[in-house]
Length: 391
Image 1 (tube, rainbow, N blue to C red):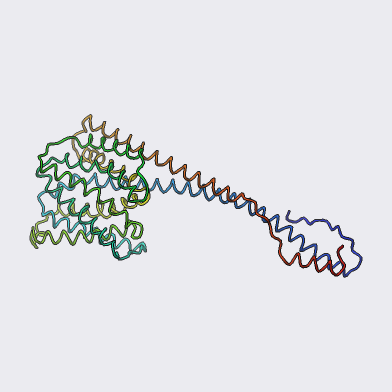
Image 2: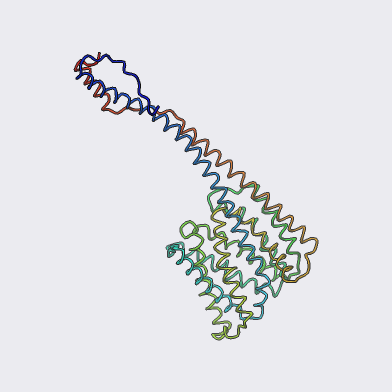
């Protein structure tokens, strides 16, 4: 123990021998101290391993909480945009969309610069993934909404979007290198049913149903095609590149379909709607959603898509609309049940994984390690014995 010295057991016969034996005893004590220190370090390593594993487990749970919060926030912004988007019904929509995505891109670039976030240029196949996200999840999706609204009621298109969690629960894990989990697939189906109840039913002709299928595929592609590039570019990089690509494409379409002076026909309410869509629904929601997908995975994050129709119903009431019908309240309860089922099951799996990691680290830390005294101690003992100072 520190501060204590082992008693001398050697008989000293001369002053020269005293000095030599004291040196040997001190070095022998040091060698013994090495063994004690090794044991203490092993014990400390075990405690440190347990502490670090526990910290890793709590960090994983904290990351999951952040992922749920950002995903729910993104879907709340999307759901609340329903009333705002209706303002642009009679506006030059393609020009408005170009302005929306250009505004969002500029905001993201400014914030990235202020916060010191590095953005990288895409390379190789990354251009294909990013262009795929833009062409399907942003451009074709909005075109399908506009065209489909002429042949189907909004509820039909809303139900198509509500079906996306089920597809993400199946395909998302495959793209991430794992297998779909039956519990998450079941939870996604529950969320889909609840969202469909919130949206309600509507009428549509064959063309409207076809556009609803396109909306469904494009909404799923917005998440699935981002998985291969989120690792290198992160939520900010994917959001920046897709928004500037969308601005360019919509500007070209607007120039052909609506003319170069289309922006002049936008009124002050149109500009307010564009500003809200650019800031909240695009710049903020894109980063939050991709952050959620990166933290939770596509299957778990996809469950949070059920928050969007609930947010739309609540926003309608806050803006002076009628109170929701009984089936809407039932749908909200079903969505909540699906979210609880999926997120709780995923959280339990994360906890079990953290527990196994902690047990493995503690086991490795408790393995006995043989202390190795310094080579100098053994050499000094042999030297003293050769000189006759030791028996």
